[in-house]
Amino acid sequence: MEAIIFDMDGVLIDSHSVSTQMLCETANEYGCNLTIHEVYSWGSLSSRQFWSKVKATYNLSQELNELINSYDVDREIEKYKSIGLIPGVREVLIECRRSLPLTEEERRFLMYGDGAKTL
Image (cartoon, rainbow, N blue to C red; front, side):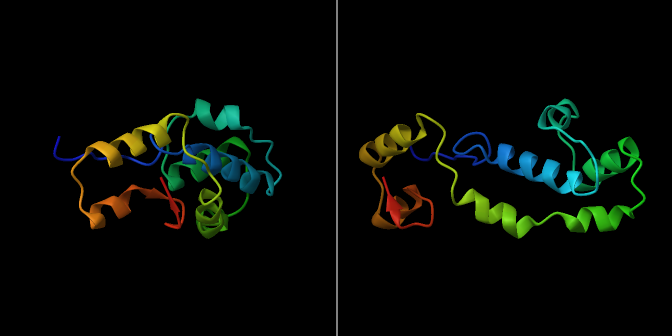
């Protein structure tokens, strides 16, 4: 094996649940009663599509750009720091680190969190 490529969302961490919860919280600040279940039923949407749907569904008077800009992306990224790995991922990463012929520089890629935590 020469390389392994991992995708973060839904493979290593469940970041989708964080963003979905935050989208609901932000929409509900405008008086919506948006639930996580409802968001999941809409499928994958871009930010513009999501807020357009919220605006139409809940008859919001705010401009679309105001709704889009109300979402705090920086807060979302901060929340990612507290997300643990999906069960079983740590063991896979440890095995990769143990069994693959990696340089020290490459081994640094098999860290998680802020880089201070190693496998």
